[in-house]
Length: 412
Image (cartoon, rainbow, N blue to C red; front, top):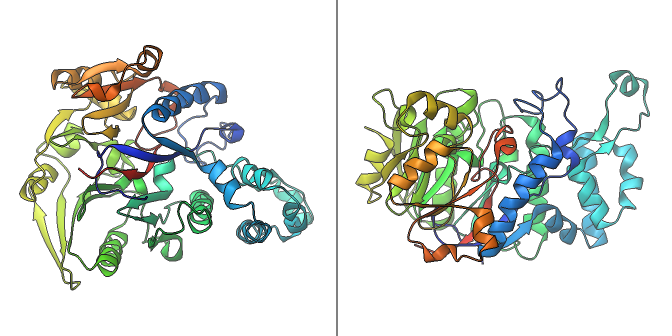
């Protein structure tokens, strides 16, 4: 089953990508081109990510996107189709015969880890291009490229073309792997992507069956939100409410989940300056009727607007009440939590002030290693924040929510 109607329903299935050597394809001179603030060391980030995966594997079924792709490529016709998709995108038709001879596992590996260039033209040689298929160091941010909602998925229209191959991979899996072929594509983002049309998963929060909060950010445009609302209504013939949060365009706030995440039925993590202060982000409520009629109204705040539709959230200040510490921990994804059940969340251990703030709001604080080592049942706690090491992962620019693509949750 595929079913996402909230941010916090008990997790049943989730897609991850365990980091490979693709993250070491960057150098200091190319990190910015790959949308990174810094280069990151493979063996350290892999160790941190493995801890996240190990814990999630104890509470839910974990898919690996590379393994899913390999399974979708077992059929020779599917492999040829995927080779065509890759070679047309990268304009490397001269590599088609070679790639068609690869096994499903080899081809899946190449799609994510890259393929060194073979220069067949002088212009190509002069360009000093290193890869015919570029490695995808952002692939482990599984949330960005695809968002599941109800029993369907949204294929993101990525703001930066360097990340488009991630969507091509995900879409191929969702249209060819038997576990996903029943899922309707709600919005085919790559079809519409342009300078004025983009939407990414970090901005899309499913707060109810017919309620979304979406960040209008550096990477998600108003036009995309309007289209998504119409597409949802067209598929389910039901009204939809969307709360559009106008985020500041800053490097540390590229998505809504960098300043806001729901952690329980009545609690959220919030970065105070953007969500709660008198200088908070503007919020526009979008109501689309079952007949497709749209109405826009401005809300006092995100939490005020959500309260009007029955979602009454008490905010926990990410980074605590010290403004300097809050800014530091927001930079390290302190507001970016992933719920694996109501009141059960995953967070970076480096954000100590955020953990203290959660503790004051009734959350038990445990490290993932201790829970697994002591065989503790995380669902035996009413409220629990599971911490995992992630200081190197945080340098990549995202947190636990960014790295997870949930595809099935229990309804609240």
